[in-house]
Length: 121
Image 1 (cartoon, rainbow, N blue to C red):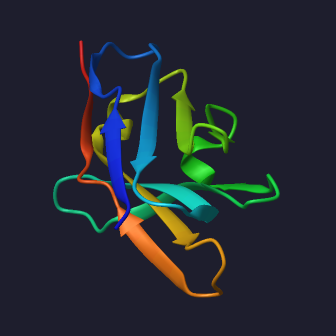
Image 2: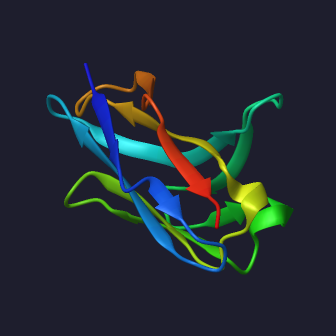
């Protein structure tokens, strides 16, 4: 019912910055927790950052101090600002959102299809 559309990925040099966006499209709903995951070749998908409906954030140790997750509830969008990018940040990045239909207590979850981030000189 809710589709997550990601944008902002691409090729960037080490030390550069990118801003990922994930916008939701669907019927009447409200978001709970939202998060960004990433998966590099040969590795498992891991949590990068998450943000609760109240604005509390959590980051993987590898990105602390460099990445910032934020959300705009009016736009139903979650962002990931990535600064001081390193080669090891190269991965497919996936957004995830929990949501519920307004007027109910039923929770659902949706994944974006992924956006590629490549850090290379």
